[in-house]
Length: 348
Image (tube, rainbow, N blue to C red; front, side):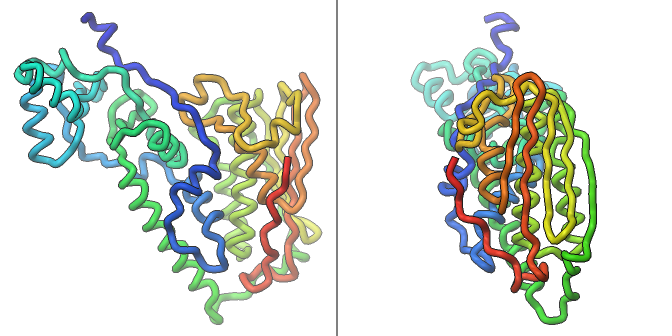
């Protein structure tokens, strides 16, 4: 088989909705105030594959033998070994490959001859929400992780993701409990607050996608907003920012606090949405194959933004662009005891 045939093929998976992912992976105690789904959604968006993956991994070259791969799997109690040279991934030898080699009598052949080359890979900058989708759609124990230069930088397993989520959720619970302590400083009065920030969002700039939402979250933290309310605002901002990045020609995200309300406005320059009702339903997406191969474009941006908002408006003109407004009512105080309950799930 020639060199071109030995290059790994990256296969994009189908995407269940974020709600499905959360439902299947929330065997976790409910957090303070019953806000477990929001906490988990925030963690799935904020944490990246690079934060969870194992960077110290066992690697073999194409010149190593299948028997060497078998020996390392037994010694390290692993079920697969990447075949890579100078950071470039060529394939993977799995336990199934070893079994076939033993049965067929080619256990002493080179890995290059029998390694799997049609690979499912993740990128280090992906949110771990997309890693969970890969584990749902492909029954593999682990996936190789590549950086933006397509170099092998680690492996990730579902156990790695679960362990990280449990740890981060425990930290979040402790933080919520500490904020309920009586010696915490009083939150700022939302009626007296005014802030306005605007962020440019560039088409397909996935490296910077999400930075505006993180800045908004820091602003809310500085003003001592109730954690649950801040999470709702940050989730809406993140979803709309990603939407502009992957579905439009570019645009801006504006965040404003005024008159006792927080408002997130996402405005893009096209191409427009032909069917707004359809676009606001769970799982609908117009993302292209390249975006989907990176793990984005699952079709939950508008649905999630609508779900967490007190008021949701969308206007779209074909050929000109789309404007989405998410508004949040700020209670008389932004402390945990005075925060408004989350809005009921809205239909499309």
